[in-house]
Length: 365
Ligand code: PMP
Image (cartoon, rainbow, N blue to C red; front, top):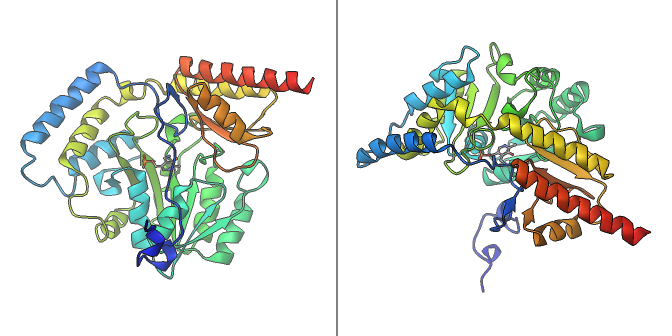
C-alpha cells in the first residue's frame, strides 16, 4: 500500500504526523478540553430557529463579511471593540492558520514557548513557516525579560503566546505580552482560547490592543462557550489585520449555518457560560485531590489540569481507559492532562485515580 510519503508530496510534509487526539466513544471523555455540559434545551431551540431561517436562504452564498456575527462577537468581548476589530473562522485553529498564511509563510518564522499547543508547529508546517520552540522557565512560567531576549535574538515574524497555556494550564502575565510585543519585529498573537476560565482579576490582552497594531488576541467558542462542534474561533485586533486576512481566507469561509448558529448562541451568552463557575470548581477539586494522592499538580488558569509524578503515564492512561475514562497523554514525561468535566465525570476520574494510587502503594508495601 502507498503511504503519503511515497506520493509527490512537499518535502517539508514528508514523514510528519497529523493532529491525532483520540476520538474514542467512552462514557467519560476528558481529553480535549471541551465543555462537557450539554447546551440548555431552550438555547438549542432558539439556535435551531435561526439556523432554519438561514437554511431557507442557503441557495445563496452567505455574507462573506459575516458582519452581524462580527458585531455580536465585538459586543460579547466589550473593551470598546466594534466589528471592524473582529475576524472569525471555523475554529481558532483556522484563525491561526490564516494569521500564519498572511504573516508567516516560506522563508519566515513563528516562535512559541514549548511545551505549548501542539497545533502551532503543525499550522506552521502547513503554511511553510519555520517553527522555533523557545524554552519556558521553572514550572512552565515565561519570564518577561527572558522572553523578550529570545524574541530580540531570533526576530520571528510571528510570536504565539498561549494564555493560559495548553497543555500546562500556566497563566500568562500581561507583563510578558508587553515585553514580547516591544521586542518583536512582527505580529504577536495571544491565544486566549481558555480566557473565560481565568480568574476575574487575571487581565486579558484585549486591554493591551489600543495603540498596538501588531497585537492579535485569539479566542474561541469551543471551550467555555460549549460550542466546539459548531467550529467558531475569532480574533480581536486592529482593523488592518482583518484586511490582511481577507487576502488569504477562502471566499465565504463561514457558512450561513455557522454564522446563524453563532449569532444565536451569542444572544444567550449568559446561559452558554453558566457552567464556567462549576467547571472551575471541578478543576480546583481535581488539583486538590491529585495533590492529596501525591501527584505533582501544575497551576491552571484553564479548564484542565496537568499533573505529574506518574511512574508510567501510558499505563495510567490505559488503566483509566479500561474504566471508560479518556485523558490526554501530552508527551511530557511522567505527566498526563485531564479536562475538568461535570461533577459526576470528575468524580469518576478522581475515584479511578484514588484506586490506581492505592493499588500502587499496596504493590510497594
Ligand atoms: N488554542 C488552544 C490553546 C487550544 O487548546 C485549542 C483547542 N484545543 C485551540 C486553540 C483550537 O480550538 P478551536 O479550533 O476549536 O477554536
